[in-house]
Image: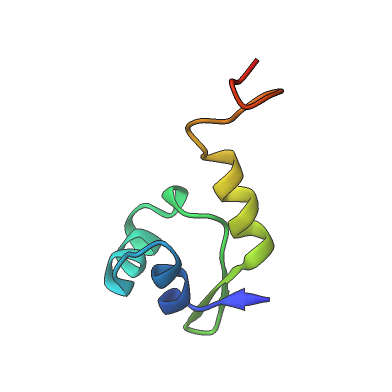
Length: 66
């Protein structure tokens, strides 16, 4: 499944224009995307992987992180 810029923006409570700007100015800030003509699409699998890689409070073991 692929998300449009608008769908990706809604998932993270961002404006579509912010995401579009990051695509052209700072693409490394975003998960991988594909360009189909002028359309940009984000793979849901890539988004989930990107989310997991950017978690700030990863827990290891039990709930206390031990």
